[in-house]
Length: 226
Image (tube, rainbow, N blue to C red; front, side, top):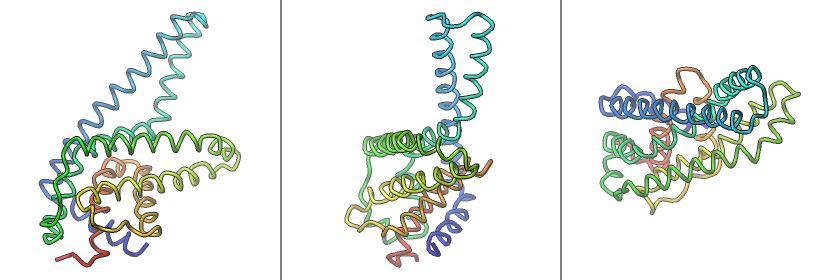
């Protein structure tokens, strides 16, 4: 966990860098745009289904539409992460290359190029794991609701495992010869990343900071820092 905290602090120091800021703004704008599009699509699909099958009366359909909006807002924490991971996946190589170039030039010189097709594959695989993992855990989430705090704690555990693996894969794509992180390091990386996604305002920075943190985690282990 000590190395993870150090990597997290180094990643925070990377945010003010002009190139990182540019990537952050581009990815955030695209994330919010996609989030609005997906949310609107879910709303209109739900309204169409209610109107088409006429399960409810007019006033009841209006109330159901409001409930759908509230459900989308309530589920936006998962939706935001899913969309953000896809978008950051598109910028992953640029983020990793920038952090490596400034902090780990020797490692950057040995890195292999990652094409946009591979970035998309990694991003889509991350989203599938994120949604699939949380859907599998949904019955346990529901059972733990009676505890009050059990559901968010277990969700943090599940998403920490998923994000740790995905962030590691993002960096190792440029360094296929490097060994994987050990389990405690990967878990620490995922836990801090998952926690940052649930903090208001900080969650807007979470995708970029998490990607930079993964770079530092991998290279601090190898003593590559200049």
